Image 1 (tube, rainbow, N blue to C red):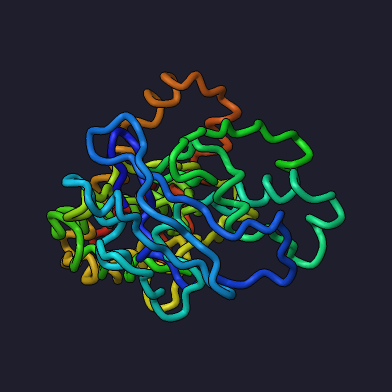
Image 2 (image 1 turned 180 degrees about the vertical axis):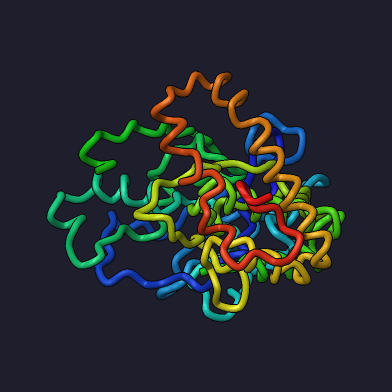
Length: 328
């Protein structure tokens, strides 16, 4: 979902139901005020209240926010502008678009380790409650939302640096379906998303989970953000898998599966193969120049080449016409 004034918020509709932790801890917060940066604004305004109702967190827009001429829904399909508590979508314990503004799995782990003793944090899937994650994480995270104890005074929280000790199933086809229905320029956006999927496979970025995709939300429509958090991952051996399903239960990091998923992105096989071939060609032609620009050592280049970048496993069972490195 979109942020404004340079902020970005993840699209909650890309996430599944929230799982319940086996052991939940926290200081006992019962509510949090949701603040938002509106389009073009440099100061946040309070949008409403997220309050605990039994095992759920339910959102209400504030009257002052609803009266604003520039008020926008935090995410129209889930939290439309209305003066009442908004029922949750089936299977959720809180609004997804607000859950997406909380720390990701890594940030949650760091905060849990900081708040709990090491044995408590490590044992039995211990987690903090959702309001604690929202209210005690840093205010400088990516996103157009922040959470406060006060409805009138905004006090940004600075994220603490994690210590070394503390640091010690979505699917691309489903995302494509959402884009077809809700995003601006769906056809071009789907082509771009397919290209990102292919590049993740070609560069060994297997950490392509749902929260590494986001869209700008301006109150009317969604628009895909620039790509971010692309990081080649070291694997054990050449056989690797993506974090998200590519199609129909398949997540192996193989271009044949990507091409087979092309219809979900409104692409034919020839178009999909052309996108793959272009990226393979660019990587092969620009590899040394980019490594020079990044001052990579010969050892680092050797570790990345044909392991993370252009891993032979990615080309197994490649469809006809697909460019395979080293094959004439």
